[in-house]
Amino acid sequence: MTKREKVKANIFNIQKFSVHDGPGIRTTVFFKGCPLKCTWCHNPESQNSGSEILYDKNKCTLCGNCIKACQNNAIEIKNNILTTNMDKCTFNGDCIVCCINSARQIAGKEYTVDEVLKEVTKDRIFYKNSRGGVTLSGGEPLIYAKFVEELLMKLKEENIHTAVDTCGYGDFKTIEKISKYTDLFLYDIKLMEDKEHILYTGVSNAIIIDNLRRLSITHNNIHLRLPLIEGINADEDNILKILKLIKDINIKKINLLPYHDIAMHKYEKLGRRYSDSMKRPADEKLKRFREIFEKEGYKVKIGG
Image 1: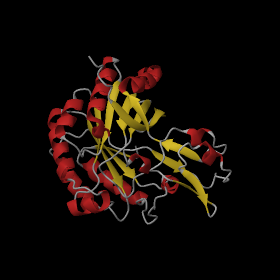
Image 2: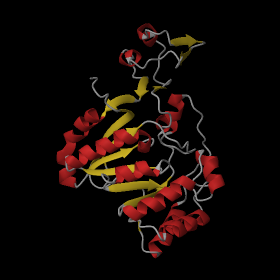
Image 3: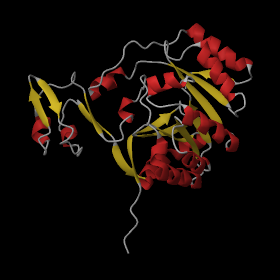
Image 4: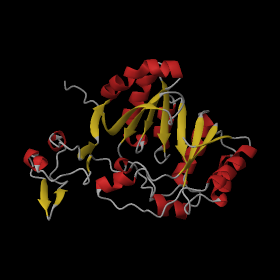
């Protein structure tokens, strides 16, 4: 009889002492892969489900150590530019270890549920003292349905508070299953106009909105998270449409998340183009949006 193969997930970061992804001090587990491709994404290394190399050309001295270390001849220097053939790369980490300037790093490592559980339970004393816990984020955790369900179940067996940060784009059966072991949902809403949503995220918002409505019927602790980007969705029309949507939905709290450009360097390391036309909404506008929601009785915070 063959031993049952352990379910695995590709994770690009297990961030300790997080204070923006739910109550108290938390550990946030970032899963790799997302069905959305948001123009403003601040974790671009989370979008693709496969592992990737991040390369900082500003730190690289073209010493050639990584070329010697690579067993697959995936790295070369042409015209004083170091390139990596990702089709040949096996992500074994040899080029990372030998880089004396820390110019290279791997985004994405496969974990089993027990490996993640072992790591996150190291800080249970901090969760207990701060009423914190563990948050599953990404990317999109729903991609790893079986893994996430098993991990959440084991966290609850350890009496650890659980939160899931989701874009809501997925099979509702998955959401329904994991909701039994989830104390808090952090649910993103980007744009209410479907054409605009498709333009800036690559997918329709129909599933996202429908899943939110259905989840609110069975789950009583949902926090709405609204990323706000000037010229894209930071306008009163979008805010009022979101308000109309949630009037009949059980929402406990709303976080207004103004755009920031701190992820710009990540795009450069991944060799991707970054749009520098996006801006943070003015503080006066953010306060106005907060007032609109507060007037209807919602608890609102600007920021995570």
